[in-house]
Length: 211
Image (cartoon, rainbow, N blue to C red; front, side, top):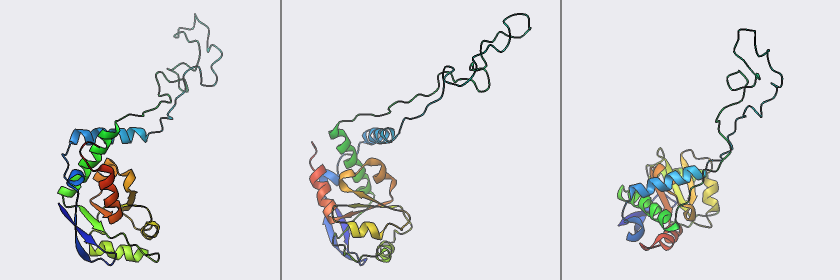
């Protein structure tokens, strides 16, 4: 499978061969779903908390005597049925963390990259970003690709500081180091731009069906 190679001037300068083991891997939808659920669960803080009847303030005195009032007996105004009372079976701090073997996580990323490659939503960008790269340069590049109005994810490698600064103020454009490639970010993007060094890194990291 091949993908167009663009330079920073917004011109197609050739094509790149995409590693079949990474960009033409078997698509496992259930594995991607499992990886996505794990990612979302691990992002949860789990700090939710409500107070029980033993933790709310007040209610130390019996509101009225036990018998003779005609009303139901009550021992405290902080019981769950009272306004301002404690919560029964409310949420308590907990960890939502899920585990997933490394081989399965990598296979899920390969599936996501394959889905984008089959949809022709992956394009390769030359890695030679100059130090004087401006926001208008990246904006012009995206407009030349006719993807300025689409959700774009730029997967980059080390040494892309100028590019990261240039797209900081562009809406709808996200960045991701190739070592942090994940199912959620890849599938949410309409177009995935991969720098040449990131492509080499992805193929080295994910290449081979057994890794």
